[in-house]
Length: 101
Ligand code: FES
Image (cartoon, rainbow, N blue to C red; front, side):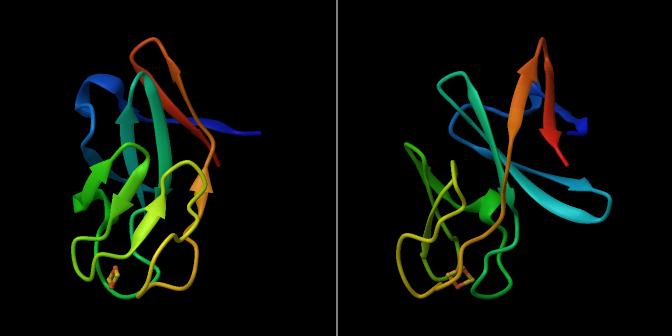
């Protein structure tokens, strides 16, 4: 395991997404009820940033064509996307947000 700090918790308002670049790869972070979740920022369907989608509970709706993904697992939940996105283990340490890369 290699935990890497990628954000500060204060930068991620609850129920909103934040895109961060990790070694050139876009990761979308979400802050829900004291937990932080990390998935690929790029939708698996086309060119859209999931960090800019609409979040309800642990489901993010893509802002372009409204496919839904579970932010805990990256699993696609509805069309038109058919492929999951990657999910990354994330944890909070004080005000630091770390992911396992
Ligand atoms: Fe996300 Fe089409 S780009 S559903």
